[in-house]
Image (cartoon, rainbow, N blue to C red; front, side, top):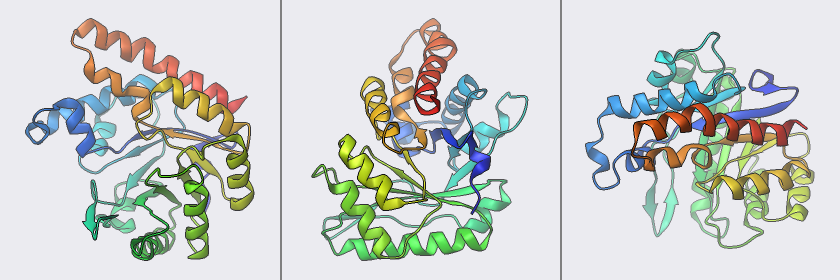
Length: 270
């Protein structure tokens, strides 16, 4: 499937804002379930507006992100993805299992130009087979609707080579998304291996809650070795929620966040 709508000169400069449970925890660490949906929507809208002129696309959720995007102030709309999975995961025999919540048909009806699925993968565990089956259903459903499919396999972070082993397990299971959204593979050598293993399939980086400086360093190494961009979330904007003063929040949105996005965009685009 064609993903050029999400790129600029072949590079993905995308904002990740599909967080739900973790987003509520940022808004109210002590009582996340008491977060008013209006507050979550307004916070996401402010983040979107802060970098909208720079992004090539944005990843949203149905609960808050879609409404935030619909009510944000911008001159010309940009393409967005919608998440297919439920927030969080269930546990089966100590393993993390993801569940599909939204169909590709419903996502297309909302105006999205692509789908995204996050799955946790422990390639050594029996749960891998179930996760691969979930990914296969999502992939086939997305392509049936003519939508490109972005797959985000998240490892348990137990070893440096885990990203490569996870990708190998998915490819062996005939899971071939249009874009892989992955964690930093651990080294420049591993980045090269990922690029070789995936061939023509582009891969972009997620931030997985890393701090901005660390993510920037990892992104530089990744892009030097075949990475095609990013779908960046918390590393960009998570500090916003720890700021107390209105003036500090406004400065973060007007200066810090746009500058951060430009910095990582320049790394990818050079």
